[in-house]
Length: 363
Image 1 (cartoon, helix red, strand yellow):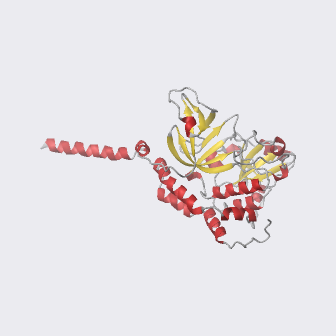
Image 2 (cartoon, rainbow, N blue to C red):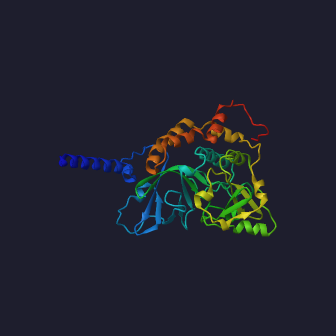
Image 3 (cartoon, one colour):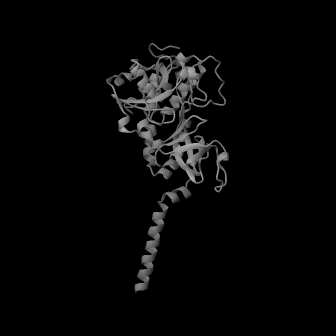
């Protein structure tokens, strides 16, 4: 009688182990199906024996033998500032920094579409947009650059991130402004400022905590005021109530230029920040965007032509694979898309009659 019970117990144990194994991250990766279409893919390959060095490139460039000691291409310094489940920061002496932020840490997943439209409209208007790296299909702007019209709007797009040939999920890629393509006389040194209420945190181009430019201008008795534009102010207004963080780029020119950088994420949560790096001033609260901000006619036209259904389909398709890897709730992730404040604003704008013009709107 003991043998059947022993056999039954052994079978139950094997079944329990099989169920547990199917729920492990390794099993989820083995059974994962990533859609062929959707956001572009970015591949990161860590160097053998040195996890701080990596290659950030396309699939062909990272398809090398695992035994090769060196990387075939520009070497980057890669780190996960807040842990392996957070953002990936890639730094290079030759290229602008690149930051990859996971879907869960982006407050409004639809906002990057609007952000990219603002960049393109500004570029077509002849406004210098420093996106960290030139788009290969974009026509170069004729010199001299107009410093007074320059924007600091790094490129932001959704990508599929692969690390060491393994799918890591859906990430928002930011290419920060870099000295290689920036006109030094137009922008000079740039720091990124994030103001929450009366407190401020700063980072430099290398994503290090630094307030050098800010403290220089304050010591000189010059207080930087944000140079809001219609489109950037409207973008920032969509984030009110979503995130209390207001992010800016402070350029060191003949006088301080506080250039709004509306991002749907918290730099402090993404990069981490030591409490002793805070600055406090009640005037930070005055950096809010104008309450009557509205998109320009050019931006309205660009957003009206956006294929929202197709783009939503791409994100929805990749989110299933994203949550399978990262262990998140796919249904909750889908719900975040539908609840996006930017999506509601975009749909309302596309529903307007073509003749509709915002009060006081310029061309």
